[in-house]
Amino acid sequence: MKDASAPQQELPKLPNTAWAVLGLLSFPGERSGYDLKKWADSSLRFFYWSPALSQIYTELKRLEQLGFAVSRIASQDELRNKRLYSITDAGQRALAAWARETPAGPPVLKHGVALRVWMGHLSEPDELRKTLEEHRDWADRTLAEVQASEDTAHDRWPFPALVLRWSERYYQSERDLAEGMLADLDELFAKGDVHVAERPGGRG
Amino acid sequence: MKDASAPQQELPKLPNTAWAVLGLLSFPGERSGYDLKKWADSSLRFFYWSPALSQIYTELKRLEQLGFAVSRIASQDELRNKRLYSITDAGQRALAAWARETPAGPPVLKHGVALRVWMGHLSEPDELRKTLEEHRDWADRTLAEVQASEDTAHDRWPFPALVLRWSERYYQSERDLAEGMLADLDELFAKGDVHVAERPGGRG
DNA sequence: GGGAGCATGTAACGGGTTACATGATTGG
DNA sequence: CCAATCATGTAACCCGTTACATGCTCCC
Image (cartoon, rainbow over all chains, first blue to last red; front, top):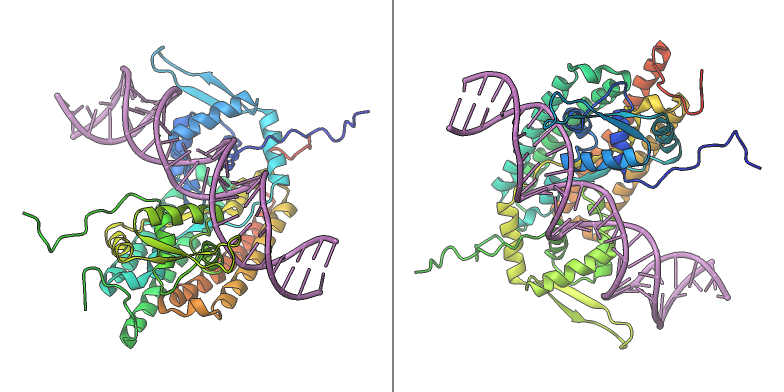
């Protein structure tokens, strides 16, 4: 016989993006795909990433097919149809089950700048320093963007606000780390014992 | 007429992985695909990521076809063929040109733990705390792995060593950030004003 | 007039993963 | 004897991107 107290079973295997999109929808209100993209750009992208618009639309459709979301058309005219999505109870339950049952796993980092320094023997010292300085400046700018984001309306929900605070510290740290690497680089160059394997174009 | 002082033009559009693999090869010595995987696991993975073995083999073949690498078979017997790769001059030049001409771009971060906290309203406080504590412990373990890696032979090249030092600080920071988020979470819960949108299974 | 923002969608492509296939050697 | 490590490779699959297609409204 079936046990009524153990109902939730169907956790379809979906890409993380699908759950992230459903997560955006899990906050009160109706949103269009376009809205979600803007929100992702001003929030998710700082610690996760912002999916392409085309993928958001794709996921939204899939979510609706699964019964995790519903949409209605809110259009003044027929040509310009704006579709607003909202989460369903089933969607809310599935998302909660996913959060409960799927371990978050370690963060994925692809740090192109670090990779460049790792292969530092391929670049000229000045080039390397420039790359790092630009990265430090990028971290500064991103930090400013995070702070700007904290002032916007939808990021005042307690948990998103908390993660934005975390992001602030993260980019501050990213900046400091860049400075640290810069200092280490200078030290390395000062010692003069760096073997530049193959200077591009240079023969001797 | 052709200008002999501007020879390097053919920078084929390759995925970053290809350049990363070529980068591994740009250090003196011959290596098998298997060797490269081990090295990536103990080094690259801390700040970039470690491609699957199958992909390393694929890239290695592509690199050889392009003339950026050469291989020779070093086998005792016929069944067990071990193929050792090394970089060519053309490969060295192409890699240097790539490093010179392709901007590194911002780092890519996909922080699943932060995403979970962002959707904190879907989880019970204890679950959330547990996720964060595990993440902090993971950062500790990874830090220890970085330190262990610093003792191994191939990571004594100056630039790789420098990046490992950077990684050390990075994971130290990751740990601190986790602690900070934990503290913020506790504060949030203490205030008691957290609206848990839909507690799984809970109706009231 | 034109560019930016709003708004939705399809199609092609490929990067990278997991699963599978194979088999030797070494050490507990 | 079995697990782990060494060692290479193919095939299926799909996630996610870019490019493309369309057309509105608002503002300079």
